[in-house]
Length: 109
Length: 112
Image (cartoon, rainbow over the protein chains, first blue to last red):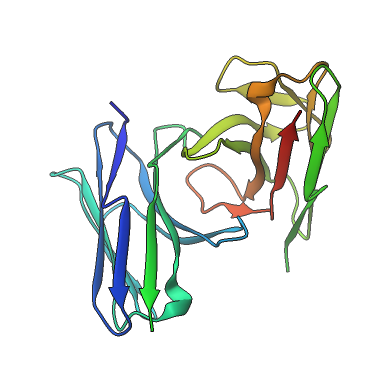
């Protein structure tokens, strides 16, 4: 069993829909990261959070430490949001990353 | 501003040949540096990280090694590549532990 599990694996949405991607982890963590990987392979760090909620534009990330669960929400989805979204957890040293296998999102115009 | 350079973008190598992938960071000092591999259809896996010159931590025993000869240079090497070394290799940097990571564009390595 992976330390970090993501769902769903694949997601197709119509433009404008509200999207939720879930991440559960089984290890004690110091922070939870959400990454976006574009079709060419490049990766961008979206959020790093250890409690509560963060918002950046149409993206919102939340974390519930007690339930060991995080969600990434995309409001008013757009085809340019199509990418693989990866959840990753860092442990005590802050250098050891545990990655989920990613959620492949396709937003259809 | 900080930038990270990784090359080459793609590489095709025969089994048994050596490997050297280079990553350099500009615009920051004493970054933490990381090498990741993403095998086809699988998630990212941390291979090595470095918190300073000459300091390398290996996360997964394997056919690869890493070196940090200069503050902002991180090199991934192999003496003899295996078929299983194929994958997408990403370099990343951060200001320190518990900090967001910034990724290079990656190297797609195919072993024939």
